[in-house]
Figure (cartoon, rainbow, N blue to C red):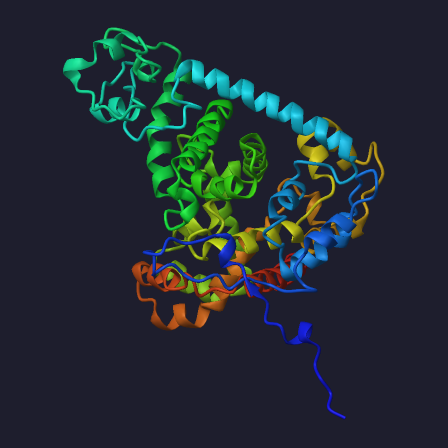
Length: 458
């Protein structure tokens, strides 16, 4: 009797590219390796089955599946909201709906604040040229005048009398350049914000250009609006290059602009330290220092070689850390990588840490609250808990170990072929589209275990 292997075992999985369609003319874009596999990828059915009738989520049931097979693109947005700490798994459907509505209202208020200062916010358009000087004077740039005119008429300096005085004509947004050359803004926060708007616009038109999704002006404008609002409310960070790469997937995965904003805001809670700059340092330098320390422990020969080449500051890994491998993987694979990372380091106290930081601090000190269930934690988080790494002020994120695992994987090539920092950069750039997200995560977990073991001995 012939034995037949069930189809589900033979099935190599369906490609996820169809969910993130690439423009036909973009033929050099790396193909997504992530495949939707029945029984491995978290499906809509398995996800919905993890909720009780009231809406309580047994997130422990889903973490293992996400860690091994990712999330089906059809439910990715709503699962990410939990992974990033937008909602507490221990909340009900009704409680989450109340939070969602409150946040949408809050976003609408912030957006209106921004619109009052610069009426192009929320208009469906955006700018790519400066609108203000560093001392608060308006710049009547012809490009801005064209971009602020919804009817498409080209405005020249000779016919901008209405624009310069802030008079809107026929429902256009000419009022966006209301500051005349004689009017100077004195509020430093507003000046700083307006100085970033054109930079956001320049980054928006460069972000994920191969995707059909961004052929639509409304989607580009949505990305610009979210980043503009975030730059206004985050006084310390504002806007920095690379944020558009982090925000772009949120807009694609969540239909409501406010929901996408809050998902991005939660992601920035994790990463904003990388973007914070002082007069003496850039925030990401701390992570690069951690990367150097990890590499020195797990691959001393490679670390010594990199130092000999003059790369001891590890600046060649700057981009990987800042935008979480968005450039090293295809679009679909980078999302797969992110959700595996977040599932691995998931902490069920994430929501309360963001919403009630004081109470979260008390819980950490053992003053209040019930100890969290280790079953509801990601595998990386569990390792940290077992090894006491969570007692440190800033436990190292899995992303650092991910970069370290990529370097270790390329160790032989780097030692043999890199004769200068340019060679290191070229070898790492050649990885684009050739990395395996699952293998990279697996490598990061092994290095994390090894590092904790060696750190304990020292």
